[in-house]
Length: 235
Length: 235
DNA sequence: AGATATAATATTGTCAGACCAATTTATATC
DNA sequence: GATATAAATTGGTCTGACAATATTATATCT
Image (cartoon, rainbow over all chains, first blue to last red; front, side, top):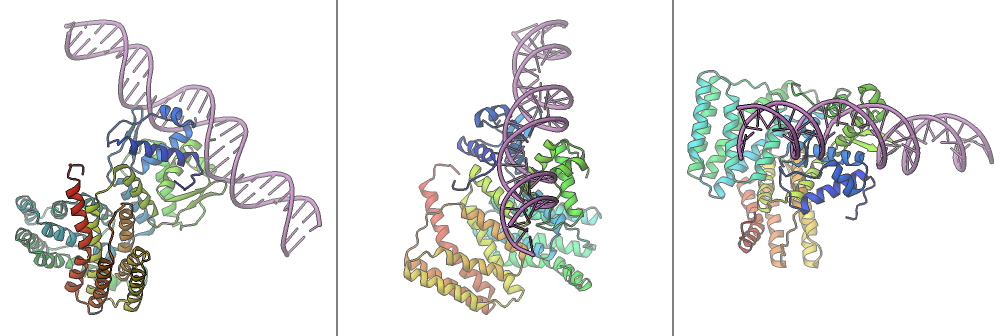
């Protein structure tokens, strides 16, 4: 409150946010139109439009041409956009991102087991079977692998955690990695998934952690190789 | 690329971002003015202004009245802003956030020990001594506690991880928790810090994890109490 | 009466021009 | 060469207009 917003646009943004919060508006609810806002806030349409445009790009509201203004579904799409731009301009340190992903996945296992959640083992095994089929048929395996890990995240029963993990994953997916895995490596990956499911069923945290750590080894090894090749001090 | 941007504003935003990325512009660099942009992109000033306003709120550029447009410092300040908005409008689930913080801190310990980093034990002990002094003097202890944990994050030698941890911490700090700790609890916290330093020096991961988990217990206990009190189904 | 097509209205998108406010740059003065 | 003043640049806000799209009301037909 003690912050003085110089521009009318910032004041308008604040007022609009306040209106959403005060009225406990939910995602999808229809908001005031530009005209109603100009009347209520007593500023020009220019100001209202810039405020709405900003809030739109922040993922707070959604403006539909001809349709009006709506409270936005509050996923973290705008955060992903920022990180995408950040990556395009400044790049990313792949090793750091993989370390983060490992921490997140280990964390998910911990949440599941410490909170004594019963995982949907059937679903996980189903996903993993599709993974194995894709491997043997030589199809695209990446999708199935991602689905497996994504589903583990979901089992952690923590929506905020899941959202952040999703943001990290989106950030990580920008990095193009040329890690080619042969069939043996893929089968090993499949077996690790399987062992992971067992460990989760038996609620053995240390075991699950050990398997997951092992599961991350190939990519760390790949990174180490890349670092040796390009030891020119860039990054 | 295949995404069709309907509005001119979105196209303009894309072009502007592209210009920053292509020219490898650094934070602080002067960008094109509104006039120059209207000339180059051949759209009205309205469109340019809404695009710049959006990019400004995303933390990609900074617009100074009378001074021009500048490439913004690219830390994660804008992400924090989004989460603040998100919190103001939709609130946050404190339990989920604490779980995330625990995962992050455990992850930091893992990084330090697995990467065989030698922690700056002197610095950590120094910080912790100040923490103890504040406790005995009845001063504000929170700052010292935060400093300790923040410094552990830094020791993990992963800037991206540190940035994300900082974002989470900022998000968490929005939640007002009325957790009053008496001197005994605070002293226990201090001793755990001390034990943590020892475990890090000796590179005992399991031990460090055990202590950190114990360190998080009081707040989890507090949350459980709150949940019992307000079991009316709201969140 | 109910479904359907059409017209009217509401709402957002873009444009142009004007003026104010703040900053930056150029100029004049000491 | 330093300083004060004037001019030019640049962003902030307002107004009015028209286009594009979506929603709502109306008329029409079965």
